Length: 364
Ligand SMILES: Cc1ncc(COP(=O)(O)O)c(C=O)c1O
Image 1 (spheres, protein in one colour):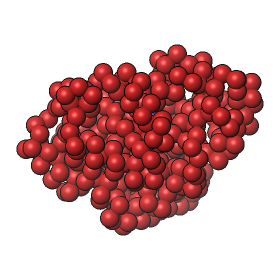
Image 2 (tube, helix red, strand yellow):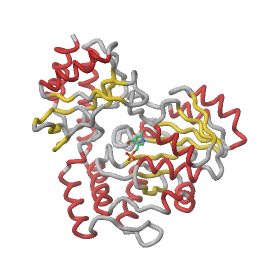
Image 3 (cartoon, protein in one colour):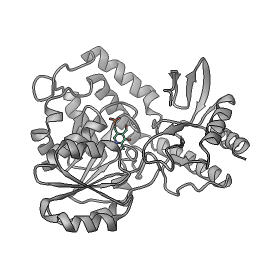
């Protein structure tokens, strides 16, 4: 599929071929990628630090901003400690490089994000898939391999079908010792839980076997990644994960922007409230159209029509009306190509109604 030639964007619009479209794509769930406080922090960071630290943290590339951001992330997630990585993808690699010291086996949800599989493979773990969202399937495998040290790898929220991982069941599937539940929360972070800290908060879990990884590029609207969890595990990432030790951290202005973004989410509950209002409105709209959206507070809705040509036609008809409803090709969706709609906190109810009305006209 051709890439989208975007020339400008706001939280709710993109400009393509000189036309501004009302957009329901991407993962800027709280609109923070364009928030004035976040942009101001980025500008201040540029003025104080320039762009890159030009070296890894453990040599000459550390700043107090990076240290402070790690503390903010741990506090926000109510975990003991956090460590930054260049992206969400490398956060998974960093976690796996630390885990592999005493976990020989990774049990991976069959529809997990590809980065989890790459991370386990790169770290040399033995990999077995369990059935998507099925703790019983994970438990059966965990019993077979308990002696090798077992880590379960799952997305918290699955980007391509909007499903919520059954974290309590997956924890119950794990052995008591030499066992870890790695939750890649790229799509739950800044979305789920009453404070917005993610899927672990949503389920109210506090278990030393949990380790969270996330991107800072989606809900937080910035860039970078992090491994968040128990101090001993985070220290092990710091000491043993080569992808952390031998690479440059996110640029300092970005780290300053991330701190401002976390402060904004923590101070302004209206952002999460708007996200949930828009999620509820789109869910209801899709139900009224005869689709079967999930019932979770997740702003990602995916669906497919029986014929790919019909989906392309609907997609184009909406574009002609100035509405961008992404029709994407991505692993793990209901079909190889499918619609993936997202709302964010910045959409107004009228904008969500515009989308639903346009879908109604063209899906009929
Ligand atoms: C579930 C999941 N994990 C990891 C990543 C990688 O994060 P990043 O883009 O920060 O590398 C993404 C998306 O990009 C994702 O959706």
